[in-house]
Length: 112
Image (cartoon, rainbow, N blue to C red; front, side, top):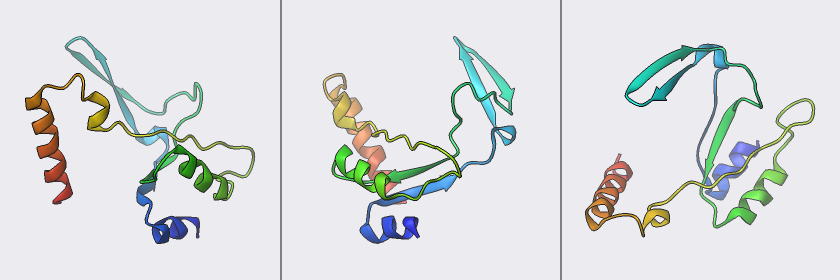
Protein backbone atom coordinates (compact mmCIF):
# COMPACT_ATOMS: atom_id res chain seq x y z
CA UNK A 1 0.00 0.00 0.00
CA UNK A 2 2.77 2.47 0.90
CA UNK A 3 4.64 1.75 -2.35
CA UNK A 4 1.45 2.52 -4.27
CA UNK A 5 1.19 5.85 -2.42
CA UNK A 6 4.76 6.66 -3.48
CA UNK A 7 3.99 5.78 -7.11
CA UNK A 8 0.74 7.76 -7.06
CA UNK A 9 2.60 10.79 -5.68
CA UNK A 10 5.10 10.54 -8.55
CA UNK A 11 8.20 10.30 -6.37
CA UNK A 12 9.11 6.60 -6.58
CA UNK A 13 11.61 5.94 -9.38
CA UNK A 14 12.73 2.46 -8.33
CA UNK A 15 12.74 0.11 -5.38
CA UNK A 16 13.34 -3.52 -4.60
CA UNK A 17 14.29 -5.98 -1.92
CA UNK A 18 17.74 -7.53 -1.92
CA UNK A 19 18.41 -11.23 -1.44
CA UNK A 20 20.37 -12.22 1.68
CA UNK A 21 24.11 -11.65 1.66
CA UNK A 22 24.56 -15.43 1.34
CA UNK A 23 23.49 -15.02 -2.31
CA UNK A 24 25.93 -12.16 -2.91
CA UNK A 25 29.56 -11.50 -3.62
CA UNK A 26 31.87 -8.61 -2.83
CA UNK A 27 34.78 -7.51 -4.94
CA UNK A 28 37.70 -6.15 -2.93
CA UNK A 29 40.04 -3.64 -4.59
CA UNK A 30 43.72 -3.23 -3.77
CA UNK A 31 45.59 -1.32 -6.45
CA UNK A 32 45.25 -3.38 -9.63
CA UNK A 33 44.21 -6.54 -7.74
CA UNK A 34 40.58 -7.67 -7.51
CA UNK A 35 39.50 -10.36 -5.06
CA UNK A 36 36.02 -11.91 -5.13
CA UNK A 37 34.57 -12.74 -1.72
CA UNK A 38 31.54 -15.03 -1.49
CA UNK A 39 28.73 -14.27 0.95
CA UNK A 40 27.33 -14.52 3.51
CA UNK A 41 28.87 -11.41 4.98
CA UNK A 42 29.08 -10.68 8.69
CA UNK A 43 26.61 -8.08 9.89
CA UNK A 44 29.25 -5.72 11.30
CA UNK A 45 26.60 -3.03 11.47
CA UNK A 46 23.53 -3.67 9.44
CA UNK A 47 23.20 -5.10 5.96
CA UNK A 48 21.01 -3.35 3.42
CA UNK A 49 17.84 -5.37 2.82
CA UNK A 50 16.29 -3.21 0.14
CA UNK A 51 16.10 0.24 -1.33
CA UNK A 52 13.85 2.91 -2.74
CA UNK A 53 14.96 5.52 -5.23
CA UNK A 54 12.80 8.61 -4.84
CA UNK A 55 12.76 11.94 -6.59
CA UNK A 56 11.83 14.54 -3.98
CA UNK A 57 12.48 18.27 -3.75
CA UNK A 58 14.62 18.06 -0.61
CA UNK A 59 15.57 16.03 2.45
CA UNK A 60 12.60 17.37 4.43
CA UNK A 61 10.18 15.88 1.90
CA UNK A 62 12.01 12.54 2.06
CA UNK A 63 11.81 12.55 5.87
CA UNK A 64 8.10 13.32 5.73
CA UNK A 65 7.50 10.33 3.45
CA UNK A 66 9.61 7.97 5.58
CA UNK A 67 7.66 8.97 8.68
CA UNK A 68 4.51 7.74 6.91
CA UNK A 69 6.07 4.35 6.15
CA UNK A 70 4.77 1.32 8.04
CA UNK A 71 7.40 -0.22 10.34
CA UNK A 72 9.54 -2.33 7.96
CA UNK A 73 10.47 -4.95 10.56
CA UNK A 74 8.61 -6.62 13.44
CA UNK A 75 10.81 -4.94 16.06
CA UNK A 76 12.76 -1.67 16.18
CA UNK A 77 14.23 -0.72 12.81
CA UNK A 78 15.59 2.22 10.86
CA UNK A 79 15.40 3.59 7.35
CA UNK A 80 18.44 5.52 6.16
CA UNK A 81 17.92 8.42 3.76
CA UNK A 82 20.77 9.52 1.52
CA UNK A 83 20.82 11.84 -1.47
CA UNK A 84 22.39 10.89 -4.78
CA UNK A 85 25.31 12.82 -6.18
CA UNK A 86 24.48 14.93 -9.20
CA UNK A 87 26.83 16.28 -11.85
CA UNK A 88 26.44 19.75 -10.32
CA UNK A 89 28.13 18.45 -7.15
CA UNK A 90 31.33 18.00 -9.17
CA UNK A 91 31.01 21.09 -11.40
CA UNK A 92 34.11 22.80 -10.02
CA UNK A 93 36.28 19.72 -10.57
CA UNK A 94 34.92 18.70 -14.00
CA UNK A 95 36.51 19.80 -17.23
CA UNK A 96 34.25 21.00 -20.04
CA UNK A 97 34.83 17.68 -21.83
CA UNK A 98 33.87 15.68 -18.73
CA UNK A 99 30.71 17.76 -18.30
CA UNK A 100 29.74 17.11 -21.93
CA UNK A 101 30.37 13.38 -21.49
CA UNK A 102 28.24 13.32 -18.32
CA UNK A 103 25.40 15.11 -20.11
CA UNK A 104 25.65 12.70 -23.06
CA UNK A 105 25.46 9.67 -20.75
CA UNK A 106 22.44 11.09 -18.90
CA UNK A 107 20.57 11.70 -22.15
CA UNK A 108 21.43 8.20 -23.35
CA UNK A 109 20.08 6.67 -20.13
CA UNK A 110 16.91 8.77 -20.26
CA UNK A 111 16.22 7.39 -23.74
CA UNK A 112 16.13 3.79 -22.53
